Amino acid sequence: MQYQPASSHSAAIIGASGYVGAELSRLVQQHPALSLFGCYVSEHSSDAGTLLSDLYPQYAHCLKIPLQGLTDNEKSSIKHQADTVFLCTEHNISVALAPEFLEAGLKVIDLSGGFRLDAVEDYPPFYGFEHKQAHWLRQAVYGLAEWYPHEIAEAQLVAVPGCYPTASLMALLPLKKAGLLKSSKVIINAVSGVTGAGRKASLATQGAELSLQAYGLFEHRHTPEITQQLQHEVLFTPHLAQFPRGILATLYAELNDDTSDTDLTSAYQCYAEQPLVRFKKLARPAIKDVVQQPFVDIGWHRQGNQLIVLSAIDNLLKGAASQAIQCINLQLGLPVEEGLL
Ligand SMILES: NC(=O)C1=CN([C@@H]2O[C@H](COP(=O)(O)OP(=O)(O)OC[C@H]3O[C@@H](n4cnc5c(N)ncnc54)[C@H](OP(=O)(O)O)[C@@H]3O)[C@@H](O)[C@H]2O)C=CC1
Ligand SMILES: CC(=O)N[C@@H](CCC(=O)OP(=O)(O)O)C(=O)O
Image (tube, rainbow, N blue to C red; front, top):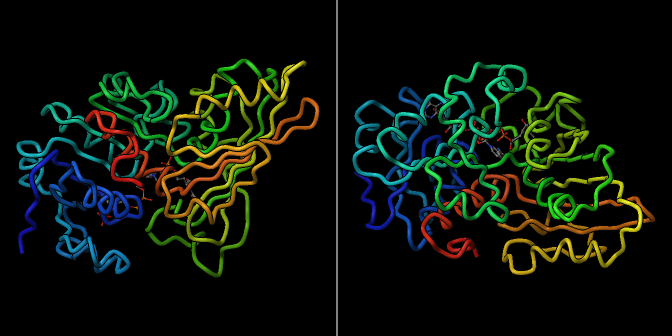
């Protein structure tokens, strides 16, 4: 059965069988201004020909869409007929795929880390590969939707932020921009559910191996991403926990002397008109409140100059797929929450 897309802005999703790609396929399918051009996996994937709803029975009502191998023919039909390509692939695969769609004039919204860092030199140490697309890296706009709406609206290539950076930056940028942070490092401890590691099986994410454990100490690739965007040093430690999805980040910062509660409240007022940000002094955000939701929940607590900010998101939504929808909404001149609430 050939999948028949409806007319409107047409989006192809590459890497659609993964956790992020499946969420994004659902959001595009349900979006009033988008049509799903097609859902793709690698050319020789064992999932080619399978219905997405067979992999994700919870979405049987909306994802009876066949996964297609990304052959040269399919690439060509995407280039000629689609408007936007979403890449939900590994970092190095996104870097390899993006240029040919960009050069064909399409918009690309990449959900990997392939275009997030400013410097090609940071890719070998943090991503383990040489980045050969310096030109496109310079063109890429960081897709933190609440912070760079105008740049995203104009961009041909958007690099959607990582999940931990989204939770961290949404909590910290208001403080940094208001000049409230002392120069000491901000400490970020964040706990993620296991879908953060992707759908491919690995020993570390198998049930019997799962516990609550730190990883990536001092060297996780999200450290340079957060530092670059925040323009402030951080000490970031991610933790993997035994629940399916969601991230809770606990951030410890020192405030400049004489910072008042009013200063803090005013700093977070930047989110007053943002429909997908829920913030409150003394709130203790919980993962259960953001799972399957496009929101980031933020709460702050202080004792003297010591500030603790808590930030919770669904790693697959605000940490990936729903933030990508926010980006395309901005590009189409739609309200940022279109198709998400
Ligand atoms: N999981 C998360 O919480 C988040 C993930 N991200 C990023 O989003 C991207 C996707 O993550 P996730 O969904 O977790 O990953 P998965 O491993 O679950 O999915 C990867 C997808 O890519 C497909 N794929 C692999 N190779 C190719 C290829 N050469 N051409 C086309 N498709 C290919 C896979 O299918 P097949 O192998 O069958 O071809 C699969 O559909 C990654 O870059 C990840 O870092 C970003 C934010 C959050
Ligand atoms: C639990 C877990 O393994 N999480 C992933 C982060 C997923 C994500 O958002 O990041 P990228 O888009 O940068 O891959 C990790 O630490 O590598």
